[in-house]
Image: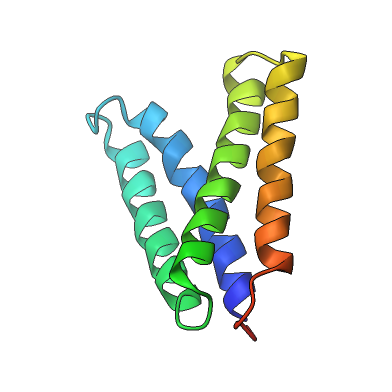
Length: 109
């Protein structure tokens, strides 16, 4: 269950990171409320996952999911660069996250 919590936490990290763009410095009420709520859910689920996943692994996977998700959403929502080497770098992050899951060790979650 810890890995499920961690994956969902990573998705909520994407939500709050993208949400920051829409808050305009926390000057817009509803985007700010959404962003803060997503932060709370993300951190809570990350915390729960760390009960059985080593902290270094959990944090690296969480930030990896967030980095990949936000990079892809940036391309889709904001027209950010889709250069070949940028895609390769995103795939390297994905491979690192998969590797951390496969070689986590000491975790039964």
